[in-house]
Length: 132
Image 1 (cartoon, rainbow, N blue to C red):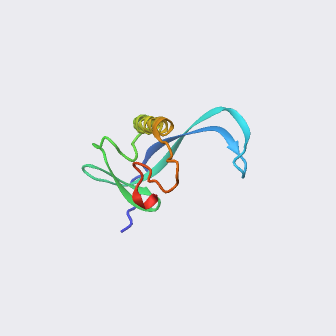
Image 2 (image 1 turned 90 degrees about the horizontal axis):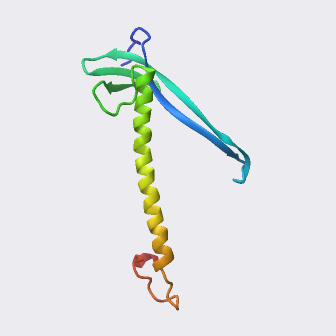
Image 3 (image 1 turned 90 degrees about the vertical axis):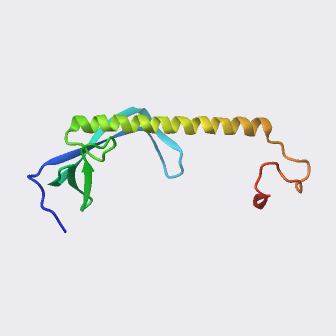
């Protein structure tokens, strides 16, 4: 069922892009320039208001957004959309920081502890039998 737009009202989702360098087809760095920050807003038409939220048109489909959710897909104003982006970016930073810490632990352990046995027939401790 297709819903008609509600008075052409828009909700917004902010996203950011940082452009720092470009690569050619062989992954060789060929252009380096200072980072450029770009703040973009995606606009979504409101199809219907409900007691709890709104129905937005997203990629020719209807998507419900609850007004009271802490994490929401879009916001009624650009300012709120930027605040939502700030929260998403902080959460992403936490996740990537933990992944970096795990990666550093793996590399430290690989460099310090992994010793290959003298002959190739010996099992490597901790390696799954199907990989030996």
